Image (cartoon, rainbow, N blue to C red):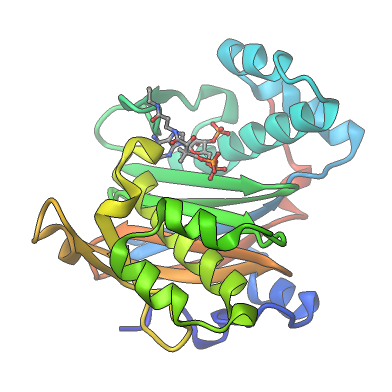
Length: 272
Ligand SMILES: CC(C)(COP(=O)(O)OP(=O)(O)OC[C@H]1O[C@@H](n2cnc3c(N)ncnc32)[C@H](O)[C@@H]1OP(=O)(O)O)[C@@H](O)C(=O)NCCC(=O)NCCS
């Protein structure tokens, strides 16, 4: 089954303009159906004016977190990310951004903490100035994006976090293909541990994902539970040049839709 429109599988190295076209800016707010996962690509690098306006929608605990960043650019990214998260969720929930309330799972996974008639779920990931936010209707998800930086000790890193089966496949690859393969595998693994809410407290070697370019994106096996792999499905995407992303969501009856948070949405920030 196709999880996304065909042109989503762009190779790293293609023009960024092509990616921009792929992540559409919707003219009307998109309808979220039960078989949709909406992915929003967000540029965290915003003007001083917008950062100042965005900082007014944060809750006291978020202001506290913002105040603890050592570097100004990290603080700005956090403020913009949280404010846009509130804006986006507020649109789906029909609430003002400041009224969106969050709860946190035992390992810190945030969720929308509202009464039962709202079944909006989300997960997000950031790398440098880019954030990708996944939103669904009552479907558990995890998302990860990583800037594909050069890694000198890539084989040691793979030894450290890939399963035996993944390592066997990885070591058969020619060295020039290993970086792309590493990030494809890594983002799928991190998206899965975020989907189940455990984060890095989950045993990364305890499950296998596919990651060869020609293979369908799949959670192949979870050692501790033979039925677990069939409960999830995944897709990979490249939200910007040299950035790899992966989404894992419950079930196999969903499709991903790709949107860009930009004008006009970024400018109509309501603070109340
Ligand atoms: C979740 C985790 C994998 C994210 O790793 P990362 O590569 O640094 O960050 P990403 O940008 O991909 O994702 C960060 C976002 O994931 C979300 N998140 C946090 N904890 C999460 C969890 N347990 N599961 C899923 N998502 C989580 C948050 O929205 C966070 O955004 P924020 O920092 O702006 O609030 C990592 O922080 C982790 O393992 N956390 C759990 C820690 C843990 O096990 N604690 C045990 C004691 S409580």
